[in-house]
Picture 1 (cartoon, rainbow, N blue to C red):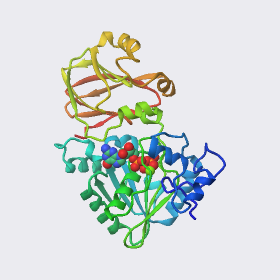
Picture 2 (cartoon, rainbow, N blue to C red; picture 1 turned 90 degrees about the vertical axis):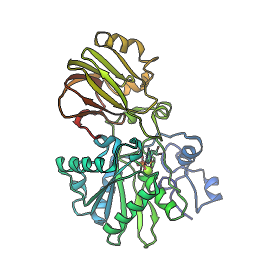
Picture 3 (cartoon, rainbow, N blue to C red; picture 1 turned 60 degrees about the vertical axis):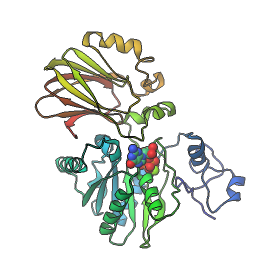
Picture 4 (cartoon, rainbow, N blue to C red; picture 1 turned 30 degrees about the horizontal axis):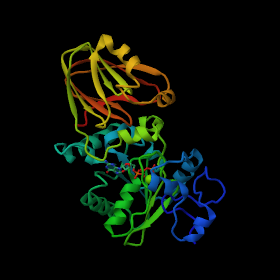
Length: 365
Ligand SMILES: Nc1nc2c(ncn2[C@@H]2O[C@H](COP(=O)(O)OP(=O)(O)OP(=O)(O)O)[C@@H](O)[C@H]2O)c(=O)[nH]1
Ligand SMILES: [Mg+2]
């Protein structure tokens, strides 16, 4: 008899359907050696989520356990949302563990973006932020040759000990581990979903060298747009295909809307190019600067479509910040949504919801 859910790692319990690990006793007894909790069952079969998240106390306990093990930590980040998913405290959390940084979801970039460029960018980013890792990789969990590369690096760094996968929620930790299972022709049984907090506790899978890879629950990031979205909006924004950049020639005194999440007002400068990398189903709309506010107030619920009223209320009030760009290309990033590469020269004012992290960085592409 097992006492943990195969999909999310939660300890089984039969009393509280609103808490993790719940399964009806009679269902459990039918197959006590391989079972999914009710939440995983609903996620897998109905894509329905129960709002249970990973709490602070469990998080701190898990950090302590991983730190004390001194085992290899594979820190997974989303390469499309580096600023929203890199754990800048990784060296403080794990001062004595070997670290492998894995930037996942590279498939979201179009083919012309070379992996070497993104890898160099990532290494510069790590250096600037004083994050030290033993190795970094840019990969996609969808590509088996990347999984092979990942495994080669794990074997080199693990020193024959178990390996922890660690990172923010939704970066694809469990997807990578499932891909490793498939690579070894084992069943990929961990639950994955585009909801936050899918994995609930450690889940072990074995490697041929008799060590284990251990999945861990993702850290919740309340600065990401995705944190505030409901199922229907998440489904609109989730994409399994590459994100085709959309190029806009923007004059000063024009404004660009990224759905209703963000307004980029081009206050002054020369005619510039804004290259937008956001999910294909998000409405991107241009207006004259003088009409921007009226348009925003009038069309949040029709043309701009997302976020919904309920989501807007959760994201706090609207704030604004100015940024300048000149010769070197810059990215304006909106955590959990995407980024806009600014090519040209000028000053923009960005209006967005206060709980979302927005900022400017060197251009990734
Ligand atoms: N485009 C793309 N999507 C991916 C990739 N890997 C995972 N995903 C998607 O990202 C979402 C989250 O995947 P999970 O594997 O559940 O992420 P996780 O890091 O385990 O999340 P938590 O368990 O909540 O910490 C799912 O919708 C996956 O299909 C990838 O390489 N490329
Ligand atoms: Mg997971």
